Length: 165
Image (tube, rainbow, N blue to C red):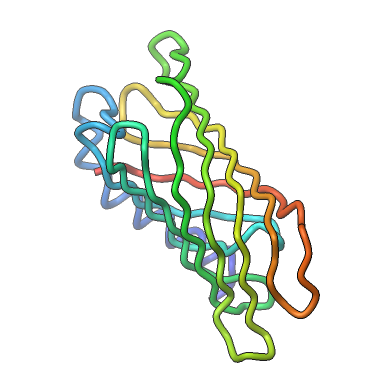
C-alpha cells in the first residue's frame, strides 16, 4: 500500500469513527472529551508519521503519542507531555486557537546499529473547532539525539489531526 493510500485509509477511519459525535453541542475537548485519535505527519527529522493519540489528564494537561513510519519505512514512536498556555483565544463562534509547550522522547525501533533515541522540546499551535470535537495542530520539536553522532537538532515541523471522544 502506498503512503498516500495509507493516509487516505487513516482519514476515512477517523471520519467514520467520529461521525456520530458531530451532533453533540460544542467540542468539549479537554473536559468531557478527553481522548483524541487521529493521524500525524512530520518532516523526516521531526518524528514518525502515523497513528496519533492524545489524552487529557486535566483540562489543559495531556499526554500524546505517535506510532508510525520514520524515514526509510522504519517504525518509530514519539511520547510527549504537553501543557496548554492559558485557555486559548476564541475566534468568534468558529473555534479556539491554543498554544502548548512540553517535552518528550522519540525512539526509532530497530537493531543496535540503526536505533535512534532523542529527547524533544515541544511547541504547538492548534485550532479546535467550536461545533465538533476536531483538533488540528502544527508543531515544532527541537531535540537532542543520542545516536552515532549525538547532537542538538532543530527537529523540523509536524502536524496532527485528532477527533476527540
